Length: 457
Image (cartoon, rainbow, N blue to C red; front, side, top):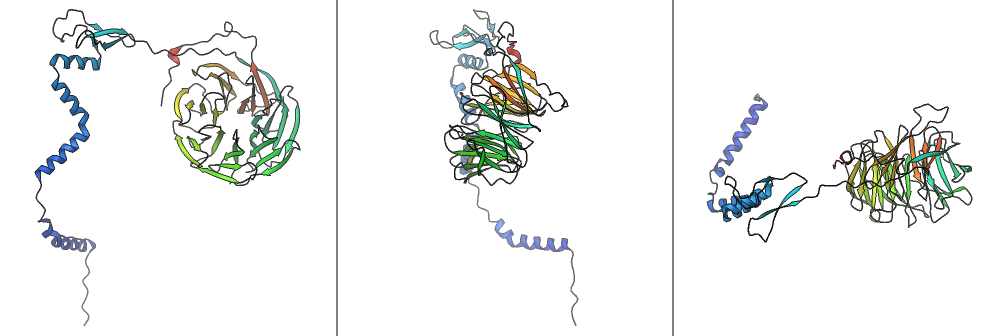
């Protein structure tokens, strides 16, 4: 006869298992080694020394000092008052007590007057450097010819012509002096988003939303190379100034380094978590800098193909980065702020606040004029050294366009730094130059240091 198996609940089985475990190990628990009191004291002393060592040293030093000297040193640390005769608070001093005003007086100890002698010296107030005067910029030429938004611009190293790329899939080359169209290059099958002209070869490089990166031979005005590898739209490209290397970046979250001649993908720079909107290159470290919609800027080691630093100060997408032509610095643009950084480690310098728009592009010339272009057609001109905003412009909309077609997508200075070329959403190219008739008397600097204090974060 088969015995009926008794079924128990899960709680009962767990309780029995716990009881069996307790019965097995109870004998071992009763045999714990005795506590060594000496070792425990040493352990606590080491831990206290490691945590509070600096405080303990300060207390010991104060205990060894004479009472009067300890009080004086404590007051010198806090600097609420200046006592000039070494007297103790509460007694009648020989010289009246003088309160220090921040930024005017400082409390110092002199060695010649004996221990505890305090002297008053003037402290220099922190001074904001006065910005350099720059003449205002004015619009002097509007060029029409594209049939779509003009998205990118590049100036030839000889400063004779410049190229623009547009949503009409055409690259146009214009004479810089006269503004006349020289050549139209067709070949892209989608929007053209980036252009660069080589300073050592007769080559023009272009990239677009068709995932293509093209090399154009300007002697024949034909495509001679394609660089295949990007998985999505390519938004920006840059040429290394001294070696035959091309860097492209875009919507596949990567920047790719290409050998210009062999078309080999030397490095794939991986690390961003969103679209890379801008890439720039220079000779010194960091040789490559990228700005992304993931709100970060990355500095790359070109030889190793790895990220050497990530800057996370921006709170919104970084749409443009630009190197200063002569200083070892660069700037980045975002809807929250324009920020300046020191190379090679990306040390933050200052914020340029006030351009309340989505800043799409930046340009800087050798005179220290930084210009930012917004999605609403606004141009702000800044003094690079002090961050002073000396001019604000609103780009006029081309007749026949809607007011919301006033966005500025790209800008660059020519090689002399005297002309600014902007490409805009009203399908035009606008050229600005300095106002020759302006003087410091007619356009004075409205310089108020109290409004120029920068928040550092």
